Length: 507
Figure (cartoon, rainbow, N blue to C red):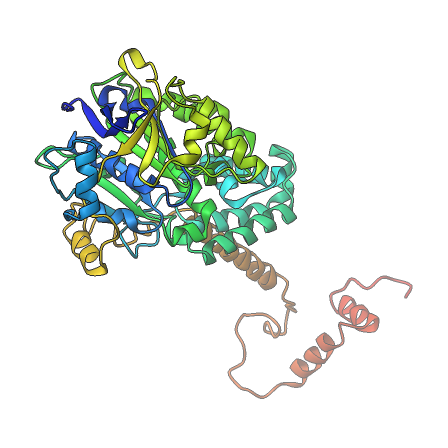
């Protein structure tokens, strides 16, 4: 039916609904990216699951987000249920074998998987500004902060490092404004307040060390299968901006770290971006341009990026044009925007003379999709109405006990569990502040010591020299102390000057 150079997607149907042919994704075009779209409940998660299974069996590591928890079942062997067996027969999947896959669970909060962390420096000012929804002026301050950190050798690892640096910038606002442009305390204060909100939302768990090593999401097992990294994202979705920023950071890290390899027989890694619309909502043009650049160029690094979302309109045209492998599940067309989405989806396919694509999109059943994969020479195939094959792993979520066992036996167990807090900007700035405070206190003490009144012949009564051992005051001592107490008045000042021989004449 299919060979080791492809992934079996399902079987296309003739106009009379009889079997037509196997639909497959050619591994050599797996790095040409893809798109899986469809309304809620139409089977997108299953399509993602069978693609991940296929890539894993081919030895390709996979990274994907698990929004609802359903995708965790890929770590367990499937069960022969009637509707699954029936679908296997319909698509001529023979033998239909059940299988469990090598999964590594990750979680930005460290609750349902190994913690994932990144340093502030790795995130960079652009992504941080996107995460924090900063204004243009505030983004300018953020860029200045990173410039100062580079020039002064300040490591930015976690949130408290950035908070300390911003506080330092506020103190030096006048000095820095002359060098870099306007740096206002209100802008710094607004950024600090946003950082506080992020900290309360759990972002502090994400920023720090040990940072994620890209090699740990590109693992293969001893039997040659690619490890599937599953990010627990159900809680993360409560902060969708953090979710989108994290995945964009991960794509950017892959782009920057991996070498150029050109076109390979199969990808080195496949990256699934579920709920992809969150990446582009309210995104500034500079960020969309960055995504388009990464998607366009990361192909030559051997990485395939697959966007999973409800509506093809969620993806900007420049990015959409880069997605060669398409799986389109059913869309509803009740509103004008939904009708436009159906037309857009239909127009992105190579037409099939056997049916009207726009009409078919609204009539697809659950587990059925319009499929168009890249054929020889990278040309999109004619779109086909396709029954999606059943997965080999479990449908639905795993239990908490099963998850804990997989985490404990993970190849990265213990590597990311403990936070490392080495000396960085926070500690360095604290040290500088203490040194400055100590120097100021010493200067004040010296100034204070040098201004003591000493009167020759009175045994350093008012100074710090030798004093009489007796606690009783002589008449002279009592007189001098009385004089000093009266220094605050103009008469007193004149008396003291007179004693010192400096009283002006003629008074």
